[in-house]
Amino acid sequence: MTTILIVDDEYLIAEILSFALEDEGFLTVTAGTAQKALTILDRERPGLIITDYMMPGMNGMEFAAAVRENPQFSTIPIVLMSGAQAHLGSARPELFTKVFEKPFEIEAMVESVKKLLNQ
Image (cartoon, rainbow, N blue to C red):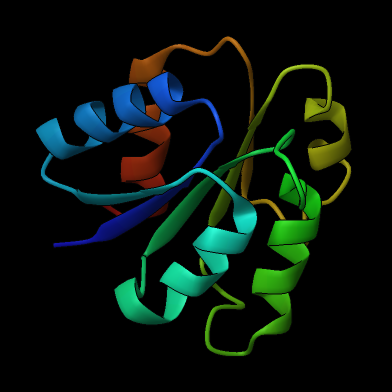
């Protein structure tokens, strides 16, 4: 079973995504900050990461860059979800496999995750 790491400081968004993905058979782990997510990576070994852009401390772009710098995690698909900053993620395809603008359709997110994981 594939684990998906969801990184968002908005608890409700993380929980809704988590429930939707678990309904499709995925395991999910959530983190409220990018710093916490970096500590979770080694333990959970996710097959995919979904991250917000605007978060306290480290933003989604800085988080994705930190993930990409680690050879163990450099090929993990990273999906960015953001409101006003989605265009910044779209301009960085080396960091983000897919970009969703908030608000997004949960079904579209789930379908993209399934495609990215070949499921």
